[in-house]
Length: 428
Image (tube, rainbow, N blue to C red):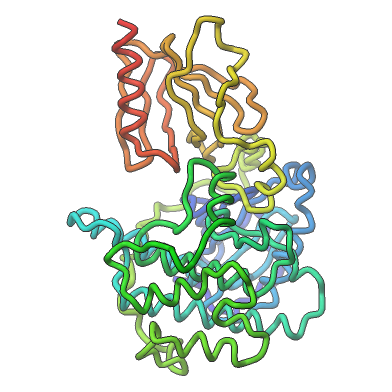
């Protein structure tokens, strides 16, 4: 149960005031934990950040901006910020609308997938409801932009999948960037995938830059009204996106689009959602924040995180090809050949570490730094090695070197399974 917005702390909490449990989410320099306050048993989402990483990557301004923005926002569809301590943790209520929408996407997509239905995630009714809530949240935030003359609103932080073309062209980030992201979310809720996907982040940027809304193709499952709205949101020119007008007419035009027919905007906040995922079965938080082991420093590194923000990748895109393409890791012998490789995430105790995984004909797997290419470890492959699929993009490697869980966000699990088993077979 989320704590009430009027919750008051007599003194600023510290890590020692909480038990920490399940990981709820992960970003470019932080991880979000389910936490339970010791004295009142209330549940929170606590965002844990690594100070050394923030300093090294010059992220302090972004952290402070996030705190400033969240502390000012008060809307039922936006996560509620309560307090922070030691500039390490952010404490939020545990039922933000965007996380609920994400849970709905995942839950309904799984049901459809199990039923053999492709290219469908959420129902039209469910999608309309949660997208309408998102529109209300955006309208509220953008109304605050009118009151704030701070230039910080022209700075962009976000997820690669939702980055707009103007940001990739180094132009100012405006409210139109959020409308582009809204189009991406709408597409993803209806299809279960993001509209712009490529082999790596750089190529994804190229797809976004070259996108043409008039020729954009949709799965047959996407209704015509939704297609029209997505096309009008995913427009290259920011000022031409529906809702981009700086006056009240902008959001009026967006909310009057046929996709939202039947939405009672005035009563939306009190309506019961057409579908909500079952409550998360979170394990009892047992990691004591007062413990000397609760430092998490050992789990942070330069590339210890599973996802990068757009700002991170923009600064790295010139040196991040996502493929070896002609080059050969120095740790390979002169006659050793690359059979398969990709940008993956290696699961560790608390984080998914971004890595380059290289399969050679030795056979062995080389684990390299995702950005520098520095050798990290090798995974020996023998006839006893097992490769167990866990999901569409995740698999376990059980080898003499140990057990490793790997996620490749770009390639299906089966590609890796076949490549590894084939390499082992050919070596026999």
